[in-house]
Image (tube, rainbow, N blue to C red; front, top):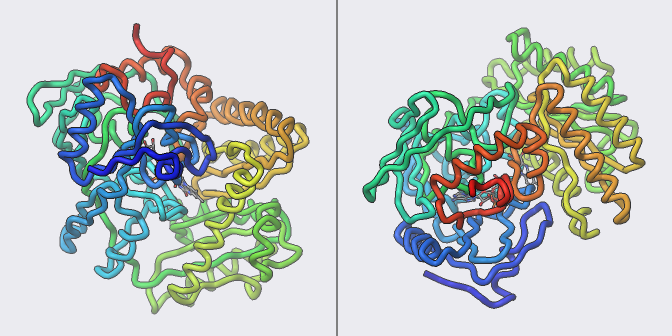
Length: 489
Ligand SMILES: Cc1cc2nc3c(=O)[nH]c(=O)nc-3n(C[C@H](O)[C@H](O)[C@H](O)COP(=O)(O)OP(=O)(O)OC[C@H]3O[C@@H](n4cnc5c(N)ncnc54)[C@H](O)[C@@H]3O)c2cc1C
């Protein structure tokens, strides 16, 4: 197993895309499951901390180490097999979603919940229960995880298969392959009925595999995953439409969401929103964004070559009704065009992340989702609140899921501190309205306080107790989701 210790070699593993920076003594690169078992066993015996690293595209500081060893999954990068018939892909955790997309495409398949950042790894996407544009139709990563191999912090291994191991009420007993049983008491809190990646997924009689999806690497290291792929659609109508104002863009979004959900004329698989500020931020690179655009929506609908003209017409009617110009859209006619639109979507967060890194702040981008009934009112609240604090901001994201990222762009340290204060208001208000503080990025090390705001101290203590069952010496991803003060004494 390769071990790197010098500052030059370990630097790349000391932060993630949130720009939270940490330290470590060494980075180890296991080549297989046995290496992971050995590394964790040794760390557990010595009580040494280990942080699991995927590709480091996370936005919550989860993989940023605070001392100890980093266990990098870069070399666990085999696509073991893709079975065309069952559409199941068996992969190691360090396979990037880009690579998986290319291989799957050759077989006429795709991974529907792929996040906007496809450089991320399968392991990271599962650990954060990531989601992407097409999650409006297809849901988040969780639904696609059919089996996992997990190495626990003690070095014991679990083979989890959906439908095989379930909790009895809130009691979960898992048999390790190495012998011995782990008996866990599941916390009692209930999660909001929105897209959610905050805290452990728990509910009575749950499938054990779901505990490890979205656990942010706090319970064990995923060393192999079996994930379900979907057949590529025959044809995909993909289009970015521009609107004169945010209001008209949001009205279009609301109607497109409602009609897609009720199968009334249009059937979007993707509904992504960009406010005027975002269009200005990425505008330099995209001179063909209309100068007077106040908002844009990127939508996709799966269709067939025979029906695509009809589909395009139905969308054109909707665009006109909300003040857009159907002749001034970016309609994607082939895979190349579609990639360009995806790049445009990716450039929104990328531009924010670059700004944050260049100015050496930490990211102040919300990840909240709210119920559809609260969406418009909450949107107005967010704008008003940030403006009260006098901060520059941009808003974009997964409008179909009522899950927008409001990103504050502070110009100095004082503004950054104001931004942090404002951020908390935005989270608390989302929770008050039945939403979540994290719909896809997870809690990591940067959003722990908001997890307490969302579930309360007692629930977070229950989460910490659950972790302690799997990680009695508290060595793995310590400080992710909750700090050590929540552990049972
Ligand atoms: C420009 C940009 C756009 C983005 N858009 C989206 C989006 O649309 N949707 C979305 O969901 N996210 C998005 N993200 C966030 C990020 O891409 C996802 O959170 C991604 O899933 C993280 O994967 P990673 O491999 O980079 O993980 P890392 O950042 O390396 O780690 C994330 C967490 O996963 C844990 N982990 C990693 N591998 C394993 C493993 N094998 N076993 C156990 N735990 C593990 C880590 O310990 C850490 O807690 C975006 C990020 C950027 C920079």
